[in-house]
Amino acid sequence: MSIPQNGNLSVMPLQEFVLEGFEGGPQTQALLFALFLALYMVAILGNITMIVVITLDARLHSPMYFFLKNLSFVDLCYSSVIAPKALVNFLSSSKVITFGGCAIQLFFFSLLATTEAFLLAVMAYDHFMAICSPLLYPITMHPSDCACLVLGSYCGGCLNSILQASFTFTLPFCSSNHIDHFHCDVPPLLKLACADTMTNELVMFGLCGFFIVVTILRMHSGGGRHKLFSTCGSHMTAVSLFYGTVFVMYAQPGAVESMEQGKVVSVFYTLVIPMLNPLIYSLRNKDVQEALWRLGQKHTILISKSG
Figure 1: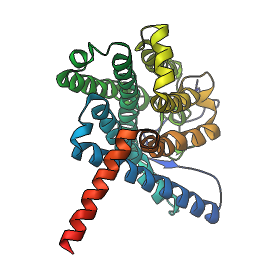
Figure 2: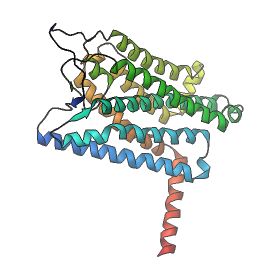
Figure 3: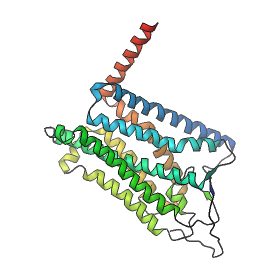
């Protein structure tokens, strides 16, 4: 918990924060800029490609790909909440973000991250129903039900982001306004607080643990879990990557204290995972590969006709 060590430390209304980011001189910052830019561009290209392919190919208009398209949209927005500001800061001597800008970034970051957590749980449930109850699948995963599941994921994300942002930004902050991170997140902000943050930490750990449990409980039986793990390798890879990094960052004791570890983990789940998800779901998915091939063939024909 964050409690001021110096009794004379003043509490002041902050107008802005400074995102300290990663240590290092101009060369290190330039290398980080190149790394972040490459990861971000690949994530943008991959997720837009998935959205376009699933939208244009009628053979992919099924519940599984409906959820996958929404996952790609969330990943697209998710990385875009963090990467642009981080890229600007790598090349700038001023790494300032306004108090309101920090609150907005945290709100949308939390909203989209939580929505992704729920979407992964929904996708696990979809796979479970397709494998273990194929006869009931068309009834259970009706388009209206799928839309409700996605809407529920966004509502859950919105609720969590409201809780996290309100609990965090109602804390009194000490005179230091330097955030030891490259974006506004709960753990580094709690370290600046001049009050007991035990409640905030319990909320953060509890919600993250809840999301992980929900994903597991979506697979109702041991046999179902075994089938899901053995036949849906792509989805389980995505789930393991996302929930593993979330657990390391938020759902373990001492996570708030490990800022250096947190920065590296944050790069992984804000940029690397949004970049990997389209690859995970396309490289091992024959339907997506065939849809990409058909789209490429149509594009080739259109070019040859226009030429």
